[in-house]
Length: 172
Image (cartoon, rainbow, N blue to C red):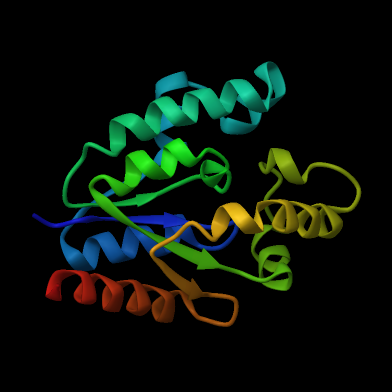
């Protein structure tokens, strides 16, 4: 049985972009947890945060993780905060391997500066907020099976690294 590839990492680390291409190259299905939540709720994540708060969203996220963790032959892109609940990673690890796409502050700023739909980066100093969240989440992100530093990689190089990890998993 093929293990799922579960991509974790901070917002703007390329989970969705890399995940879509890797899934296509591996002939696997692609699942974006945030997109599934938006589709199910008929609301954007930013609107869910605004209307109901982060705790409500995290509960929706855990419910969705339970569902998608049952899928097979999938590349799953998680939201940046999915790691905040150990249970989420436990569910995803039952049928998958956790690949952490690490990105440094500069790369995250570069990748998120054009996007106004990031509820956790709203406010006057997004760079300070990124640094603060990265520091708070560092221990949570360390719960992974593989780590790829994507800070200086092109999308193609990041995809290649994911494919190499998948090859290692299949060889076992």
